[in-house]
Structures are given as C-alpha cells and as structure tokens.
Image (cartoon, rainbow over all chains, first blue to last red; front, top):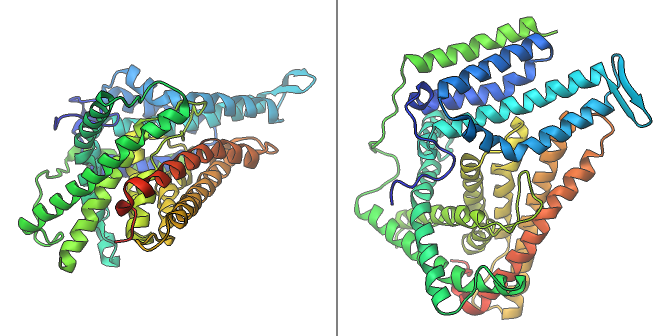
Length: 264
Length: 184
C-alpha cells in the first residue's frame, strides 16, 4: 500500500533519477526563464540539443514523455497555426484570401512551439524522474532562507508530505465507502447526472467525517511522540549533493552567457 | 487542548483536506477540457476547510494543494502561468473563509452562506486562471488575437459547472453533516 506512487514518476536508475532533487528543481526553475533568451535558430538549436540530451540521460521511455505532452499538443498546434497565418513578415509563401503564410510567420510559429515544447518537456522530465516526496524535501531545503522572514517553510513541507503520504490511504478508504454504498443500492456511475451528483453525498459525508477523525488521531500521535515543529528534528531521507549536481548547475549557469552572446 | 496541539491539529487537518482534494480531482466529469482545468470537486475540501477554519488556513491549504496538483500533473508553459494556475489559483479559493457558518444560523441562511462562499472562491480562481491565460497566451499568440475573450470563456467553461456542483453538494451537507462546516 505504501508503494503506490501518485503522479507521473517512472522508477529508473538513470543519472537524472539519481540526482539531488535540489539541483533538478533549481535547473528546471532557471531553465523556464532562460528559454525566453532564445530568439534565433542558433539559440533555439542550443536549447533543443540540451533538451534532447536531458531526454536521453533520463532513459525514460518516449511513451511516458509523450503522455506528459499529450494534454498540451493541441495548444501547441493552435499557437503554431495562429502564428503561422497571422504574423506578416518576411516573404510570402502562400497568399489566398484570408490566408497569408510568410517565412517570418512560419519562423515565429516554429520558435514559439519549440519554446512551449521545451518548457513542458523540462517540467515533465522533473516529475518523471523525481518522486513528489523528493521534490517536497528539495523544496523545504531550498526555501530554508525564507525561514528568516518567518515564512513557515517547515510547516509547508510537512503539510505536503502528510498530504502525499495519505493520498493512497484515503483513496483506499474512498473505494471502500463506494463499495459499501453500492452494496446499499447507491449508483455512482450510471443513471442521470442529477442522480449521480446526489449519489456523491453518501460518499463525501463519511469520507470527510473519517478524514477529520484521522487528522485528529494523527495530531495526537505527533504530540505523543514529542513533535514541536522543526526544532531539533532529524530526517529519515537525507539529501545528497554530488558532483553530477554541481555539473548540472554549471551547465545551466554557462548557458546564460552563451545564449546572450548568440542571440540576435 | 493547548495552543500547540491546536496548531498541530490545524496542520494535519489541512494536510488531509489537501489529500482529499487530490483524490476528488481524479474523479473528473468528462468534457471538452482538453488542456488544463476540468470539472471536478477538487475545490470542495478547500472551501469546506476555509469555512471551518477561516481565511488564513483556507488559503494555506489551497496554495499547498496547488503545488501538489502541479507535481502530480504539471502543465507549465510560462513562469507567471505556473504561479497563477497553481498556487495562486487555489490560494484565492481559501477566501471562501471570509464567510462563517455557526450553529445558531437557520438552514436557509447556511445555504446562502455556502453559495456565497463557493461563489467568491470560484470567482477569484476564475480571475487567476483568466489572468494566467491572458499573460502566457497573450505572449505567444500573434497581436490581434482576442486572447482575453478566449481565456475568459475557456476558464468559465469549467469553473462555472464546478461552482454549481460544489455549491449544490455542500448545501446538502447542511442537513446531513452541518458540524463539518461550522467554524471551530
């Protein structure tokens, strides 16, 4: 039961899987901004090559990457078409009535589509190779400086970890209640819409009541074990920063001046 | 209960509500919401928690839910879009906590408070998704595209049905489990 992994994570042994979540988070965060520096074929080329290298290093099957891309493909196609036909610059390739296809428009469309694809692939690679709980640990560690501003970093991370830990448990509970209510004659998946909406009530009420009970038990258990915030707390999962993490950050840092020099 | 216990309880309640939101977000009502956003009960636990524990905790649980939602199913195309579509979109749902339900109120009044609270949360979330669409799609679509209209209609398309569903189901709580909604 504890091994159910929610989200997109695909277990693996690649370099990207073994990297520290902090370096991956920092790199993706920076890259989302850096991608906007590209504005010509050379700079976009550099970014595309880096993205391809990242895909190869992740050793995640392309099927999973495609699954992450699917919800966004339509948007990319729409933006491509809009830009291709409504940007008027460069030589005309095709001109008929309302449709004007120009070299400038095509280039603009290609650049924007590539940028969208690259950002989506970067964030997908992060969630494909890092479990949500690792990302939470990484975020808690990276946000430590904000503790000085009295931002409750530890509490935020704890809330995230508890939520992630209890998703499978509560999912099981939801299924149990659904089965129990189905046995009593409630129909969840058939019948008219109004009937199905009303059927959600005998599911939600017991679910919420037991959820609040669970929260109370959990708070009590934490108290009994002497929980008092992050003072003197030790960690079960320790983050390890290695050479490959420093290398990743170095690549990202070097990328900035390279793109600035090469951009038109 | 002392104050420390109370704080731990608030923390665990918020966490469990976030987990419920995630589970409810998996039960989607199918529709033409191909990219980002869908009709589901995902906002319900946040609205309920905001009514129960007030604006601050409602907003906190919303923001954390937004981040987890992004970890589970990311849809990121622009830095500002990430903020407005995930943490901010659900943080503002917590504003439902401006309203308060107490034991003394009549059932009719409770239902009106639920409708207003859900409407406020949903409206603010709509604004957040709308702005996000205007900002990122506006930067990617060519000049002259009616980006604002598209963004508004698209967001309205899934938030309005979600609002109706959630307000309706939460109103049914007034009869069957009012203690869950009352301010603690």
